[in-house]
Image (cartoon, rainbow, N blue to C red; front, side, top):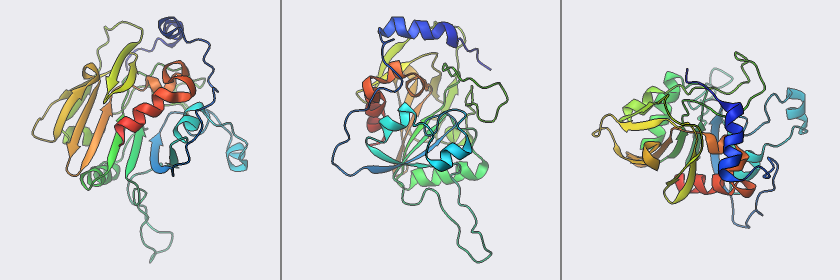
Length: 258
């Protein structure tokens, strides 16, 4: 597993960006009057519910709303997903439920792992026109106050699903890289990177892929759909990298999921 240097890195982030005064709960820009699009979201990061939130608080609607969710919901109606494959009905004759039905946009950010059925469903969904933002970070840099092994803890080092190779891509991590923030861009949107992985095109014939953000991201045309793969999740972990009210995070998602 790649090493994590979060405590020292927090100071480096603040120093590099002069942004230590940006509070995690900074208000998002006012939501526009335009209708919000639906966005499917699968993640192990505390983007939709806060880390360690109690079930009774979630069920009662009293759990705090993470700053990432506030930023994303300014433009999208989030549909949280814990599977991508069709789910059998509750009764023998009941039809299956397809969690991707009706979704044009999907963000899979540092997932816990995709089952074989998830991989097949995701590939089929993209090839029929879906737009996917796939974030697979080999070395998370956020601080998570849960012990290793706790099932609520985010996946520290991303598991690369087989569908990535099917699209002709590979992700590797270079241990010998400096701490600090590298400012890159993705389709014109700001993309701050911290201990990022490197994406390579292993099979150019598998899909129409190009590398971006100094090799930390790839943009692929897969069938009728599009995949944006980013090998770093820092902008989803650190409010000081996401801009005021999460503006940089919002711009990145908008660029990745047109």
